Amino acid sequence: MARSISKKAASSNSGTTPESRLEVLKTYKIYIGGQFPRTESGRYYVPVNAKGKKLANVCLSSRKDFRDAVEAARNAFGGWSGRAAFNRGQILYRMAEMLEGRKAQFVEELQLQDASRSQAEKEVNLAIDRLIYYAGWCDKYQQLFGSVNPVASSHFNFSVPEPTGVVAIIAPQETSLLGLVSVMAPVIAGGNTCIVLGSYNKPLCSVTFSEVLNCSDLPGGVVNILTGKVSELAPWMADHMDVNALVHAEHDAATLKLLQEKAAANVKRVFNYSEVSWAGNEGQSPYFILDTQEIKTTWHPIENIGGGGSKY
Image 1 (cartoon, rainbow, N blue to C red):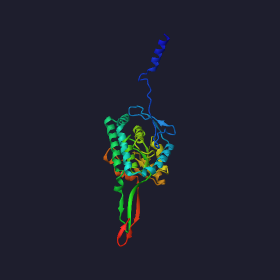
Image 2: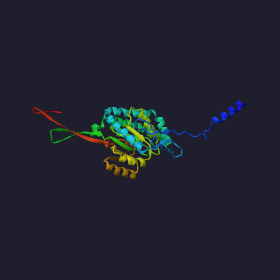
Image 3: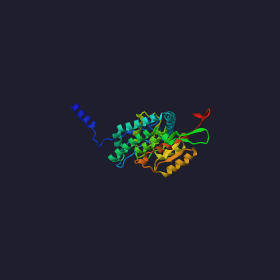
């Protein structure tokens, strides 16, 4: 009798109805230096979609997280900028391959963030195609933007674009995936490293995309992805002396003004892409690569040989 009662009690306690069960939300970490740490502050937030559904536990990144990301980006810069251009193209193409293989997951996350299925599929496909687009430009943009300049002396004069260094990016906030890929890809295609602040209200795909990066042969620190508030992190992006350029892709005139004013103190270039439609053809261009390049000019003397020839 006692054994029968205990079986009934165990049966009644082990089962829960879907209505009574508390959902275990996934914790989305940040991505710094090829690792997935939690924010050092221990803070997090829970974004919700239009239906009020809680999406995840998402890290609320701090100033210390940003400093760590800048250090990782700076350490990775020498190796990444020194790689052969075709190898950078291979790695961007590998990103596209990995994203293609996880398309269903990204479509699901976009739908959770209020996109219809057709909209989600279109965004993921565009993001894949955009990575392939910039993969193709990795070993070509220098030919397009470099030049041999006429000079009035016995010299050859060459101008070629070179990466500017560490770039801090505020990604478009209205898109979870496509905007982030569109602003990140040209920066690293040109040999720079970067820290990207993803969408605050739609963070899922930006964090999941870091998992794609982590298995795409991309060296740790080349791309670092943070989540959190633009208002908290924007001042530190502009103030940090080891950040060489800023990309602002959000419709926020006050933040843009703050970035421009603070960046002037340490001579950072600020690029504003707030008016770009990332879903259209204007969302991709080799000129986005050129924005975060510096032009290096080299003078090479022409040495005369005997009566007329020349050698380099």
